[in-house]
Length: 119
Image (cartoon, rainbow, N blue to C red; front, side, top):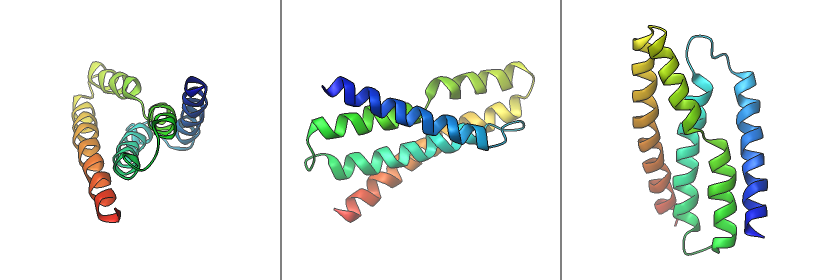
């Protein structure tokens, strides 16, 4: 049954990501993917900090793996970084990759810190 919940959560996260991507202009910079991945890192850090030890794995897994796993996207990040570099926009690729990795790590840490403060 957990597989079903993870799948449904993944569908919800993917649809949310797709909807955001349609509404954000990405012609000059992949803002939607950057925002999705950084915010998803923050939410995952916050959620897991608050959930571990308080919620069952049956609840944590569909949210963390399903919803947030479906919402964030490493493959799109990798493709966009590669595409910008390949097309000669190495400055954009560098900023995007750096902001995504460092921003994601900082956001996950901020979510963890907020979760610890709330707990």
